[in-house]
Image (cartoon, rainbow, N blue to C red):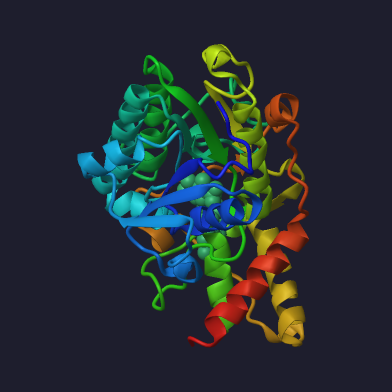
Length: 358
Ligand code: UGA
């Protein structure tokens, strides 16, 4: 498969190109390659600066439309990032979440199997499930996946994502790679409630919003859960390492190529692990520095129960630590951006972007 970066005859389809990760990928493709982009989304607000770009074609649509699915699958490389991935929606909108995270990507996978396109599908680190505080590294092809009961509707998203992975892995003839992101952060992540979205975004956007509004940061169930926050720039570097490895495989060998196709990869930074309470402390310090105020002037964080905050059916993964050995071994990739750098970039962007809108 030819994926030379200077080959202007290549078009990559980016489904969900208007989202947080998609918009960074689109920028990187335009900056690092001569490829064209076929971008699909329902919302293009993050892409205003790209709408008239000569190498981009955009389609305002979603994967519920079979004709759209067929069209996307005609391109040799399809990156699917489209999904409902806001935790507060997993409880109240479970069916919609499942359609978005299983029905639609499964249809796209079937179309790619028919056309021969390489499908790079974004799954989630949440497929490892209800991990305990002392669980060790999560290893792609070894760790168990345990979910709470059906009444814990938090797992609607993760179980749909997992079923999609299993469907993809079982589809005859599909050339696929699955990406499991571990809490990517960076500019353009999520939304500010009441400004450009409703509900509860993920923790970084929540904390940034509260800091900007002078409100206390809310620590769900004491903020004991741990996450490994990963810069979106590292995530984009991972994708380019993947494209390079996939592009180096000749068509005749593609069915058996080790290391690229028929693989799921954790993409995360294991060195960036913090508890959410520690994250709150770091965010408060960075905000005080960015704003030139004393951290003691900011409201103290407040504890809140998961049910109270998100509603009935909320549950949590207590530790999400990726094994990064497989990406390193097979693709030579290792995330390198430290937590403090990633947080400062994200929070500074948020403050600048939303201050004018307050
Ligand atoms: C979410 C998605 O569900 C995953 O699919 C996705 O892969 C993941 O984000 C990600 O960004 O990679 P989660 O890690 O639980 O999963 O996302 P957050 O909503 O950011 O929550 C992280 C932790 O912070 C949880 O323990 C949550 O209870 C806590 N939290 C969240 C707070 O303590 N306060 C808040 O205001 C928000």
